[in-house]
Length: 300
Length: 253
Image 1: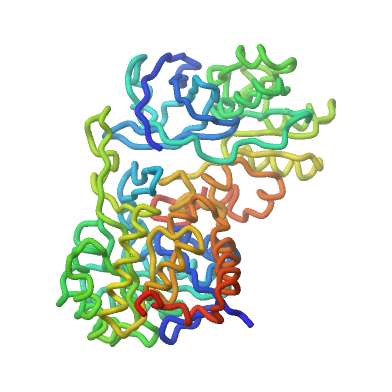
Image 2: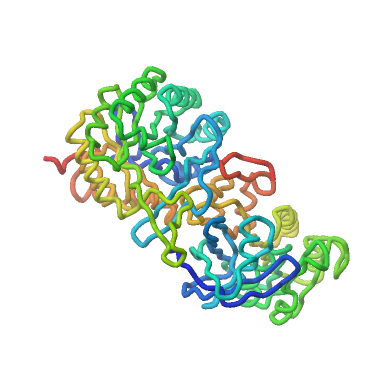
């Protein structure tokens, strides 16, 4: 019996950890590798209608407590991405992440991901470092409702919305997703942030602003998932600073049915194996027979 | 971690290649690289050409970033992240033949200093040869190949390598250079049944194993490499044929 099995609404997963969007998920080969290394699913790099190179370097900085990036949504364009999907979907569950500047464009991209064999689509309503996209749309209740509704009309696969923590109305945004028929919310994307080099007297990232991720953001993410679980009926997927099974358990117990890992993959490509083993031992020791039995228990 | 360090010395290696030294108190091993930031211009991966307390990069002026680095003088600041990557490993006690192509020779220098490996320096012509004198200070045998025959063996570094391997027994070839050279070098090592370690290169963004920009067949050149074994390279279908552009699209090399 596989005690790590879980589901996010109708989406069933053999293992509860997914690769978060933006990490090792831009090519078919990378996605196949991560599935073989123990990920229950891979969320693709966010894909748009046309090819984008993203911001120029520096696009990434490391800290002792996490990292910060401003990749700027680089992607080869949805049509070019078909061949990467072809390779990846044969190996396991792929969730297609898309970004767009209008609800119509979101619907078109989601439709293509469905055709390419994605098991679900994740709407990027939360990237903090690309003008006109991501959190600039994802912090407006009406826009979020419109986008999720139009994508729901366009596809049959589950629609997940990835939310930004850079707002004081997180649960209202979550409700807008739910009211529009969204199947799950994913929280959190990175925290809008900046780092300045004193010697050069300027921001390090070429985009100046970036998104903070890694261990530093975990308490923010856990709080966000806890709030969303309390406010919503649809499932929550937790993400932000997970690098071991205890981190994952914080999210699960806050209310996440599944979780995603991003930054930690850079430091340890075998992180999913480590988390899966840790989860199994923990569940045996503490007498949990399934992931589902642990979801949201911190609320009780 | 990201640091701003001062250039402590600049050395001219050839008409278009210079070495820049700086002090960076972080452990590094032969074959590792750093991300070099020139504010307002770019940040690029550069192999370390020295790995002690005094570290160095050896830069051929070919693009915006490398030309900007060439304008730096002793005392100027440059941003450094890293070191990153796996570096060369499992070479202790082996009879090594180091094969460098063009500026790729610089990435082999820490290994050559550590082992005194026999070395082939390959270049297009006599003006492109770098680090010959320094290599001679560490290695008993240093051979030169030039495509046009203006110095040493006339032909490419792989042809010279095959010749040298037929005369002397080696356990390991360590190589860095243009991918077309490495492609043929890998083939030659497979044919000869000799172990090899190749230092590969791809366009990089994070340099730290996260973003996936530099992957070939799912292997991260920055974190799983940049040094790959013969067996690993044999599994890379994209090696010698395709690379990823900044958007992630697959393009022919």
